[in-house]
Length: 506
Ligand code: AMP
Ligand code: MG
Image (cartoon, rainbow, N blue to C red; front, side, top):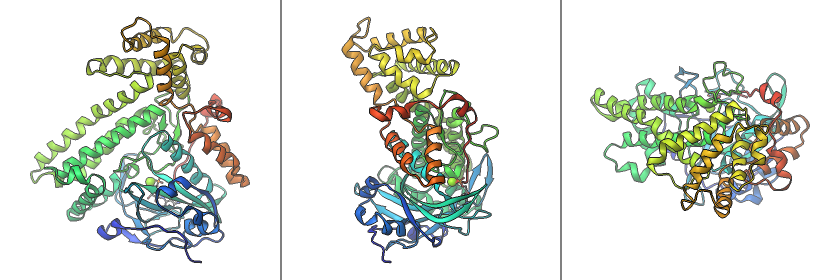
């Protein structure tokens, strides 16, 4: 069958980085069926959407028919997993098909996940199951709708073949779109081998791809690269923290240089606010707990910095000083991004540097209150918007009608009033405007764990995609609670959250 897909590939990774991959072909699948096609993303990529619906899309997105111009390859990378270094990981079940320049001129990777074993598969079967691939669609599209940089799902195809995990599951292939698949672990691959020449080529490629204008002409381009990654990753993790996202497996091979969220495995959103929240079944010691994420991002950046040392300066002492300065600045960068997000969530328009400490304390004390009273993180923030417009009842209901939030609310109101023409009390108009602004940054619908599981079970066990589609519709309009979507805002029963576990390598 000829492929009707019209990807206009321009494969710079394959062209410029030999030694970093193995050319490899996807495994054929017996009965491909298109379960999901992201039509708006396909249009963004300049694809002919109509020709990708149905059997032609199933043939393309299963890997059975390679689109013209694709040069499939498995990328090599290394990585620190739960703190321990593995010098060779790589795409065990993924393939980069190539890159496409999208309608806005951005270069984007098109990649498969679950397309069969590669030379990096080690003991793995190279496969993926329908449930986890649809999970990546739900979580990734929700993150995108929340305005958080992320890789995105373009399509999911059921293969018609079983995948053996604890039980037999229906198999699937996911097509993923990413700004690139360059990871901290990609740099670690060459650095750990002492292959300086390849490392330099990789760093130059990365600069050309992600920061061409500002970095190419920088006096210290490799130092500027480290700063730029620090900026993107600190901004990203601050956004995660402000929506309650737990990545679950922040190994260095899962930290993208582009600053996109990547690798939706055991991730989940926090329900009742708890910095110690962990859902991943393999994260026994809570290394990747919700509240640890900023520190882990800093740790991962340090691993990147180490790989770049030989490129920074001939004198090792000098290189170390330069890298250390960037790494040491990470926590402050992160806190600045976090505070910017928190101010918006609190409905504060103005943030003078003089107010930083007090505003950060206001946000921190709010979180402490949510934690102490076991309040749902998402609803706590969201209902603060109604309180800004004068309706405190929904918020107070989250505190079981107690006076627990009284003192904090008084402080917050005073801070809000300080922005409103110096009036002692925030005026009604100011309150309504503030509530509107707050509702545009505090989501009401997130992918609740029980809803995600319910939708995936229906799709995987019974082939019923309707709950998945309804949930996807709700989580991709996260600030809107109109009509039926409101039911998706309900927290999971506490017992469900307490026993909820997510899984890796699925
Ligand atoms: P992840 O936890 O998805 O980031 O994967 C970590 C490493 O394990 C990567 O090198 C993956 O390619 C590899 N891997 C995960 N699952 C499989 C599988 N079923 N078959 C082959 N390799 C896998
Ligand atoms: Mg990974």
